[in-house]
Length: 477
Ligand SMILES: *Cc1c(COP(=O)(O)O)cnc(C)c1O
Image (tube, rainbow, N blue to C red; front, side, top):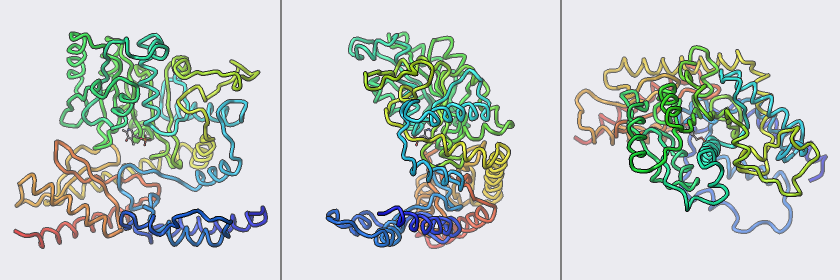
């Protein structure tokens, strides 16, 4: 492709991109394709000679697009969002154009120094103590793995890195039953063994019970197992429950545990001063992660990882072969030593574009609006005799189910709600997902998509009610 052709196609694509964002509501939110349908339409072998861009783009629209789930659809209420926004897309276009690999200061000084400043901005925006230093990771899963590895190295005085774990005692990591699966994965990868993870019970609000943490630690110590780390979740994936951070911090301090805070989704809500109660006690944490790529209108991927003591992180990961040595030495940051990967994308640019374009107040307005929409939806649920809430709504996720007054069999309710979810998603007009709370099937309604408005929430509620009614009226007795 010549540069002249690139220029032409790029203009065409921008028109298509703007149209897509304008018209995204005309697509089914969740792709209706069957497994194997897309791969069946793809040639078995690569083309021997180059094809025209017109052909490639035609196939993008005809073959790929029908197999996409539209995460930027305002009626995307599933999982947690992966929001983008116009300024973020524009930044990604520039990032792709420069194609820089930003592993060290020297490989693009602006990328390193902008990242440093953006992490300071994010720390200030979320009310972190100024002593925290940040680095951008790809995902919260990676950040949590970094936290557990650093906890392991601090605890063993960097001997696990040097000698491996075979001569070490057994360790324990603590989190609640509602904790994200990435914690268990990190415990496994860190060589501690999945059995090292203690999943502690939660209270009626699905938050970790501090007394259970105390007694689990005492129990492990009495058996010669060394407590290593606890993970507090602000905004669990199931129901956005908030673990009691200060109490957990006090317990961790008393017993010398690392405290990692996973706020992957809810971290963005810390922009709101009225929600800072969630992070009360954050000064006691050793590490904290949240994902601007979920709720903060920044294209996937972009995860903000903060640590209290950056030297521990760097000592855990640092490697300095001859070919990576540079003249600047200690005077600059080399983010390649702040995590697992060597090569790094330039992710700070989209944060800079997003934060400047929205402004902090603009971001706050959107987030407040999302929370208000979730509260509205929760009111709809509460006002309807055949529906019920299954968890408190501290943020913008609502866990609920259809519960006709005449039906009290738990298994029947589970399958009725599973059928309701399937039918709703089949319409293509909304996309919701589910979780289990106290062992029961719960629908999740997350009102956090960049462009969601009351019109979308009202339409979704209408659809949910009528679909539930039609399913119960046709159900076999
Ligand atoms: C989404 C989520 C994660 C995982 O985030 P990734 O960035 O996809 O790794 C971890 N913890 C919580 C609480 C989450 O909601």
